[in-house]
Length: 324
Image 1: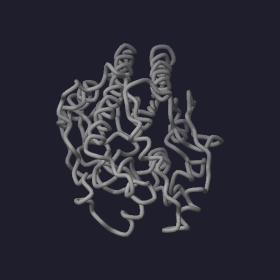
Image 2: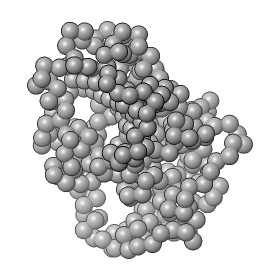
Image 3: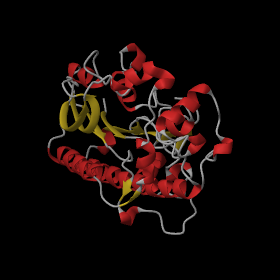
Image 4: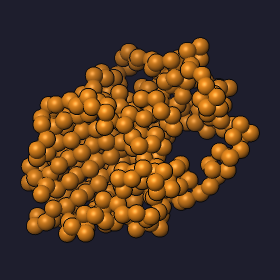
């Protein structure tokens, strides 16, 4: 039975991968996985919201089935994760980086650098108020603040990579199969990218579909969400959207450098041929598409995710178009 190395990111728009044809980004590590394995061009998250998506990924259950509906209701140990199941089968199970579970939860894994969450009900209270909920411009301000430079998430992800690589070099079992989950915070906002990983100045930055207010799709739900986000009152201009997507591309480039380092460590460990490698994200980011930024809607930019599988029994260089 092969080992399993699951690499995940946070908020990776599925169209920002060079193997998928996006020339704005440079993702040689993900390109390598796609060339050596199978990529899925119609993979969808179970929820375009962080905590329910992560709870579903960990448990194989719908968020609605385990009481994880929003970012006030993370996984808190209500059912077993694949970590519990791996250990029950006699396999080592370890995580590195962001989990976004309840801080007190037994995740089933030996955890390193876990970034966890607290359960809360502010979001639920605002939801009950429906149209009376006060708007917040925090998401708009995050987008307007996009720029080059360091962030705490960058430092955190570098530590995650270093810790995972040390484990692969020195502690990964050779006598029993193992399951390792390496989980990055990038390219989740704050929108900060290392200067040397930004796309070249002057590169063409395509605009997303229906970015202009006149083209926004309308419904009671979509309009209410835009209002609550403050986006209806202060939509991003064309120049602001281009800058946001320029910075975001640099963030994806940074993420790819971390994936490359982990894959190199797996190669150096001598275990690559016996390891199934999976890459995916919890959800995407709208980045101005259809009159939205961030997530929480069911358009492809938020609900679709990149997904690649490489390893024993996986066809190389294949693209699956089946909805997954």
